[in-house]
Amino acid sequence: MSGHSKWNNIKHKKEKADAAKAKIFTKIGKEMAVAIKAGGADP
Image (cartoon, one colour):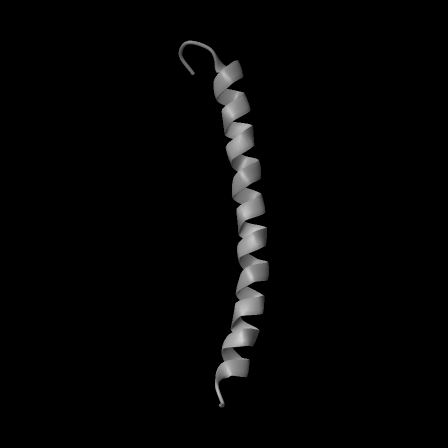
């Protein structure tokens, strides 16, 4: 059953990268929400 190990390695790397990416986008989204709420009538 060759090939399973390769996908498993890719999966672990992808999970780590996706988690880091999600963390960044979540942070940016929160900052945007705060800026929009505090913004004003016409930015």
